[in-house]
Image (cartoon, rainbow, N blue to C red):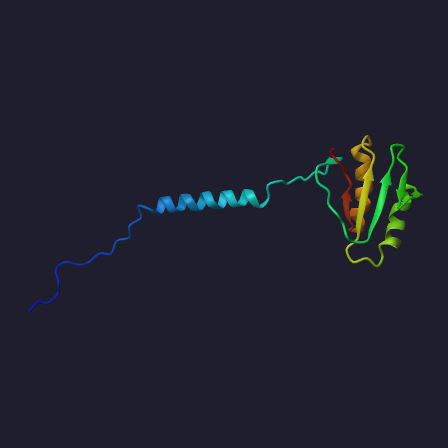
Length: 132
């Protein structure tokens, strides 16, 4: 007596919808990756519609049109900024410096002060004037 079946069952996987699923996954990840980091370069311009309040202890660096540097209304030279900031911000956990630059100064003037903040690992915020 032969009890074995003559037909063997072959399992099949339907892959007809797999292309659609992969397309939607690819589309989803592309959209999410562009939303995660939309602006690589962020610029703070001299005029702004909104203002941000900083509640921490802050130090203000002001640079006039004549390239005179002031730290909290005290005139200093560019070479003295780093030493004075280090003494003022010695015991502050998250030091924040507000930069107030005249509108018609060059980018290089701003970069000179920002390099000091980068060396000292200080967060620097460029103050802007609210648009009317």
